Length: 298
Image (cartoon, rainbow, N blue to C red; front, side):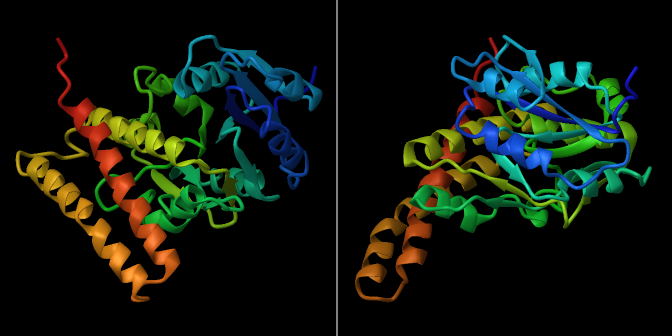
């Protein structure tokens, strides 16, 4: 009988044939982890070659017909053999010491969840360049956020037993499940979030504008769900709603200003591109938030 591995790398996947092969190759090239680690791919109903590719690299493959990252991760959590769960999304690429450095961080009993830097993988489109430049995944916006520290689901490591005690991820969340998981974990176990500099992960960002705006609304909706479920952490009052609408209105008015500044050389093309993308991202994110935050529950 084979001994249990130290860690389980958990990968939810849906029609990921274009990216999952590279991810699994990079996992095979990982630095040594005492006790080793297994790779668990949870197929979320793929119609392409995702399952075939995962099996060809020796991954444990599970099938979760219920759509959504929460349901997929929960199935993986239930079947994982390792004491440490390392969550990575199927459109990511880890550097060689990612798993080893995260396992090392979890040796500290005071650490509840560990993560590391996330960088955009070879950004070439405007959408990719914007997300990379915005750096939504930096520590001050995630693990060191002054109001609600959390880690992103694509790069979250924790102890399996604690994840099971929490009941895993909330499957009613389409997005924002990572924030909710971290909020509940900190409330339950009173442990810290650890940012591990050596645990570098590259993410293949949304490449088209349409996909980026859809993602922005999706994230906004997830943030609203967290606000509803955790009003003590994500605080909201009657002044915030008009404040957000005012901010969106002001940003919408900056379009012509950016164009003029670009035309006369008062702003670099890179900066103008960033400002234009940020205006649209901000509008779509808060539209998703407002639609969900004030949706009737009847």
